[in-house]
Length: 333
Image 1: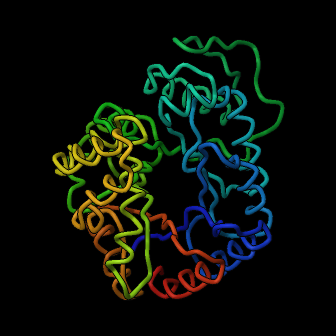
Image 2 (image 1 turned 90 degrees about the horizontal axis):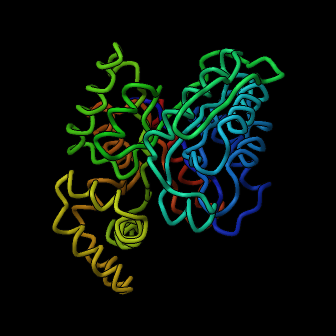
C-alpha cells in the first residue's frame, strides 16, 4: 500500500504530554507523517515543534495554515526554521480557509484566494533558495530583504488544499502535493484531471504531485454508530464553512443531498442537517470498520491513485488513540 500518516493527535481533553507519547509511538511504528491544522484554536507550528522535538523519523507538516493569517515573509521564516529544527522532516500545507474565519477572526478581507496563494508560493520558493524575497504582485510588494539563516534545503515541499477546478489547476501547476478533504476514491477522476491539466501547463506531470487526503477513520465493529458520529462533521463543512464544500459535493455527485443539508444547516436545524447526510456520503469519504476492513478501504484510496493517507482519529481518549494506532500499524507498511 501507500504511506499512512496521522492528522492531529490530541484526544479530547488530552494533555500535550499524552500527545507527545502518541507521536513517539507513531514514529516507532512506522507511520509516515503527523500533521496538524490551524483554524481558531492552537496554532499549528508550536504544536508541530513539540512533536518534532520528540521524534526522529516521522515527517511533520501543516494541514493547513491559511495564507491570510501571516505575511509571506513571516510564514517563510517559520516554515524554514521548522525544517531546520526537524532536520528536513517538515512540509508546509497551505490553504485559503474561508470568508468567516479570515474576516471575523483574522480581520483580513477574504479576496482572490488563488492569486494570494500563488504570491505566497512564489515568495516562499525564493526564501528556500536563499534569495532576496523581491516580489511585485497584486497583494504584496517586497524588496531588499532575504532571510538571515541558511535553509536546510532549497525544496521544502509545499502542499495546497484545493477543491474548485481553478484551484486544482493551480495546485497541479505550482505545488508539490495536494491536501484534499472528503476525497471519495470512486469519484475523484474529475479532480485528478484538473490537477493533471495544471501540471502539464507548467511542463510537469501528475507524478510530480503527492496526493495526500485527510480521511476520518473509525476503527469499530459498529459501523452504524460510526456513521452517526461522522454525519455532523460532514454537515458542518457543507453548511457552515462557506460555499466550497457544498459546491464540491455537487461535483462528486451528492448535489441533491448537499442542498438539503445546507438548507437545514442555514435554517439552524443542525440535528436535521446531520441526519440528512446519507450513509453513501459517509461511506464514500470515511474509513470505518475492523482493522482488516479499514485496511481494505485504505487500499481503495491507493488503488485510485492516492499516495499517502492522513488518518483523522475519532476516539474519545488517549487509550482509544493508542489502540487505533497499534491495531492499524500492521497494515501501513
